[in-house]
Amino acid sequence: QVQLVESGGGLVQPGGSLRLSCAASGFRFSSSAMSWVRQAPGKGLEWVSNINSGGGSTGYADSVKGRFTISRDNAKNMLYLQMNSLKPEDTAVYYCSKPPSDRGQGTQVTVSS
Image (cartoon, rainbow, N blue to C red; front, side):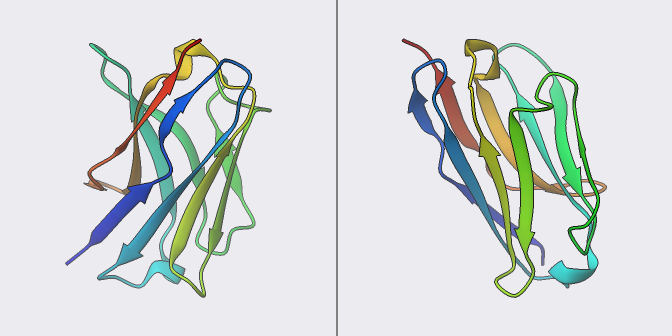
């Protein structure tokens, strides 16, 4: 079955950076588009970014465009999210997602001074 395991979250000061990783297994990763979504405290799920199966096409929510970069390594079955210039409003649980509905357990990102 599909397994997605996120890592790399933590506490960071505003303006800082984090790199999230997602280890994927149980499906043909190299054939699947992937996404990152997040859920802030008390709010619903928000799409953050997506990437096509080959890695050549990406998309970003306006709220993170220019600050976050999604990437993947199909040889290692890994998905990444490089997050720079972090803001307090980026605080959320970040989930690796295989559309339409598979998600990992999430990793907490807290941006605070």
